[in-house]
Amino acid sequence: MARRRLSEAIRWQIIGMHATGASFKAIGRQLGYHYTVISRLVRKHRQTGAVKDCPQPGRPRVTSEREDRALLRLIRREPFSTSTVLKRAWLPNRHLSTRTVRNRLKAAGMAARRVIKRPRLTDDHKRRRLAWCLARQRWNLRTWRRIHWSDESRFLLHVTDGRLRVWRHRNTAYTPRHIRQTVPFGGGSVMVWGCISHDCKLDLVTIRGNLTGDQYMRHVLEPVVVTHFDNHPLVTRPVYMDDNARPHRSRAVVDYLQNNAVTTLPWPAMSPDLNPLEHVWDILGRRIQALQPPVQTLRELEAALHREWLQVTREQIRRWTGGMRRRVDAVIRARGGFTRY
Image 1 (spheres, rainbow, N blue to C red):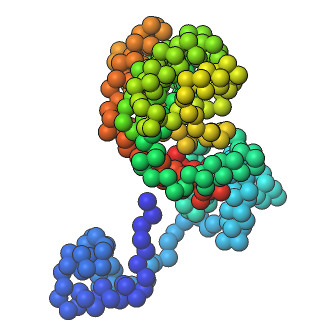
Image 2: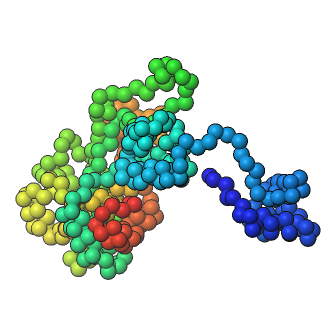
Image 3: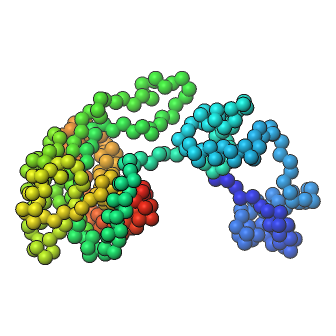
């Protein structure tokens, strides 16, 4: 974090306050600086009679402020460029190091940070997302709490995090304790289906193999969704939300839902940020990775997922489902584009 520099006016104010008898700590509390900053300034004034910074020794800068601004314009156009690529494109006729590039970017408050990944949005996706949110902008919690949010998620047995780092000395990359062992395709995976609402959480269902429309009806809709919805009178019957995956939109599934009086919520494509159930999948994934000892088989992974699903509390779910108006407003502000959710 960069230190705040004292302006010349503030420095003379400090000297004046000290001359009136104020202590270093009293001056620091009043002006918002540490007392050691005050004491160093007063000592400098006693020794030199001035408050300005002394000339600093060191190598002169190899770039001007104008050239530094050109680098910032370049990074705004190409934010994913490496320091090596930036060095070549910035001042191709100058002999500069990648360290210089990184130093200039760091001085401008920039740093290489984790990339946020989102589904690819076309202009049509953005228009549909915006229209969906505008049509529901006035919905209150009483309306949102009727929605039952559903989704499927696949969990790998062995997750490989591309951002993983290891502390080691040079030339020790191939030391066995510094190597993260992997298996093809994550060692297998388990797909589960879940459904939450503001007032309830349905049973987690394990999906065997690839999900099809017939399997969706026999293992999810008939034993879980329709059974749960039949417990509600028609007047207060919930609304079922599922995304636009092919098994969800097959003719047989659509007819089955209509025949069983299950009202569905139209859904804009590429909109996981509007589904609060995504928070549950994120929590389950983090908890599974944190298990000690870690799961070793797909059977253990499946059992752990069902166990962690039961640990998700109603208070957590209500915090996520109760924020739907904020999600809708965020999409509207982004004109159908990306949001922080």
